[in-house]
Amino acid sequence: MLQKILIANRGEIAVRIIRACAEMGILSVAVHTDADRHALHVKKADEAHSVGSDPLAGYLNPHRLVNLALETGCDAIHPGYGFLSENAEFAEICSRRGIRFIGPPAEVIRRMGDKTEARRTMQQAGVPVIPGSEGNLAGLDEALRLAETIGYPVMLKATSGGGGRGIRRCNDAQALRQNYQRVVSEATKAFGRAEVFLEKCIVDPRHIEVQILADRHGNVIHLFERDCSIQRRNQKLIEIAPSPQLDDEQRRTVCELAVKAARAVGYENAGTVEFLFDRDGRCYFMEMNTRVQVEHTITEAITGVDIVEEQIRIASGLPLCYRQEEIQRRGYAMQFRINAEDPRNDFLPSFGRITRYYAPGGPGVRTDTAIYTGYDVPPYYDSMIAKLIVWAMSWDDVIARGRRALDDMEISGIKTTRAYYQQILRSEAFQQGRFDTGFVERHPELLRYSEKRDKAHVATAIAAAIAAHAGL
Image (cartoon, rainbow, N blue to C red):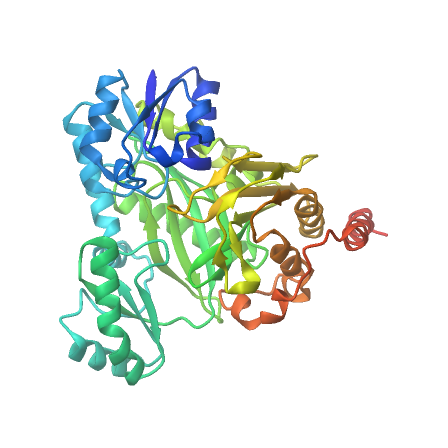
């Protein structure tokens, strides 16, 4: 078993990994820039070390992080998500220097990070992919010819893309001409590569992803699926496990495809295989995320599996704790990404000091965060400041619990998305499990909300859920 882990990340995921280390008797080492010197992950870790004054550079320097791991006696690095978590060079440097990288091998990261290579690999493995270019586009002329063949709308995507960046929908040839150079530019700036490819646009799909675990002994299992369809501009807002929109046959099919995809690339550690379901129920491989996901929490809630602990065990060379037949799902879980944004002002970021913070509690409620009263939310990082997770046995109950927990949560001093999520939970379409990736754009009326607590509505929702649960 690993003895000491450097966490090459910050914020709530760093705190999450520190807690897993503490439960496993493993020492944790935090890193921080000057902007994060008062951050919670710095306070929680067994050790904390500065990686410089620049708010970003320290988290993005693989050589410096590996050197620090060696200097502090660490035998492993956990990259979390974001930053260097899907950086093949980082994994390679760790391997060369004798540090365990808590993630898949560098070659797998490289293959799955290249979206065109990932498409080819899935096609060879018999996993359905969205119709599109066979490889990277040679230029705009090729893009226009292919778009005419497969039909508009189409999606232009950065080959090395991720996190919703480097993606543009084109409804016609004019839009394709306008967006081509923009996507190339976005790809170059964000990922250091100008390559782009083209796919048929699946209009208003359901975004379904499957959590997988794989060890170096050839064992691969799935932990069922998550529904990530509630998103804005390709950024997820609310995630649900399992999906209320899939039947048992669809669930079995997509989970089996995810395991097949993981075996096809020789996967190791935790990963997520993402699919799009079209209006006719057909599913297509979209991408594979070679890291722990932000929304791993809801899979933990419905299965009882500690995914971060399993990551550490796998990196230690141990086999999985579970066989597929031992994985059972129970109830529903929902995660709300609490972002420091003002939804009523086009989701403008809202940074500053948190003057009051209160985390909700009670049965089936979990909050993963790194904020506290008096914490200054820095403007340099992602706007997500907390994750609120709720679990209940039924769909109606988890909605009621979500509304209650959102109402209990208090974050003062900045704007957040908390009250907006209350509006989504009140939506009849959402309550009936009828939503796709176009839900947010189709319902601008949900932005007309009040910041005031809505006790009457919460009480009514809870009473209705209790009545439904009791069969009254």
